Image (cartoon, rainbow, N blue to C red; front, top):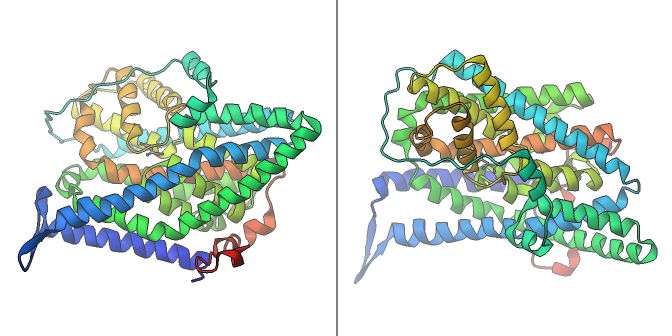
Length: 446
Ligand code: ASP
């Protein structure tokens, strides 16, 4: 069975759409978490038990777990390869500076835009909601804490916990040491290069199984999606959704064009697979393997840049999340009749931007960060309980935006460092050949 990229993308879309449709159908059959049974001779089959909580749940979770399984080894190995190949380690600081700068600036733009849009459209006006659930805010970590916690006292603990910033720091130092170790270093570097090829192959294998994974994930999710709450909070939902789409389809393309001169339409087209994965998993972290493949094989970014900026972005860059937080802050202020001053505005921008650093890209983390933001400007944290019901779908959408932002910044940094292969970027078929896997004749895939 041979597949091509376009057919892989098509198969993933088919998996998604059929999962969503089946989910909606099951929702009609089993409203409010009820069950539907099919009599079969002497016994009955519980549709919820067998399919929703059974096959779909298990299939979906296995799919996400296998993606996550690759994240730490992939980031570690490819970042070491990237650092070794840099030759000049001073470059590292420059690349890091550019990436972090751009990540912070785009996040600040995202949240300012989202807040302005929310002020203009007033999604919270007239909403009268009470909630009996509560939400407790975690304390925002100080900048000093964030910096200290970036350095692992035990790299194996960092691997085990999947602490991305710590893995990044260890890999960078290890890579620099390899580059400085002469012949032994060269031997180790060659080993890591080979490991990198094997791990990327594993990514490709998983991508080929993705259509089934996303089908299971979305079927189970949409069966229990709370549509009534979404309708109720339609204005909030709509403002966040539109702001996310505008940021991804207008702000990013404009920045990309201005800073690199590259054609943004090609860029957006190449983001397809990564966006679909991000949307289905709602986790930038779990999507790292696909983002990495997109950046290197389809967009043409050299691994020395992508191996560093992609995992960094998945950890610290969350423009989509910032957009949700901007709208949510204004929304909650309006619902609770609190006027936000200009300094509150600036405070929200600053806290949301800083809060995104060091918070992993996993589902739902945006709400935890939102609690910190609300506390900073004295808004009731309980407000979050009102929007939690509609968050999952928004989480999926904003994760897609987060991942697009990671790739956009990666592309800009690569272009500025002369590490972008324009032929690959302009080749519509780039990356297709690599995705062809013949599972029946394993030795012929070399
Ligand atoms: N799920 C998002 C991500 O992984 C984070 C969030 O907004 O909750 O990027």
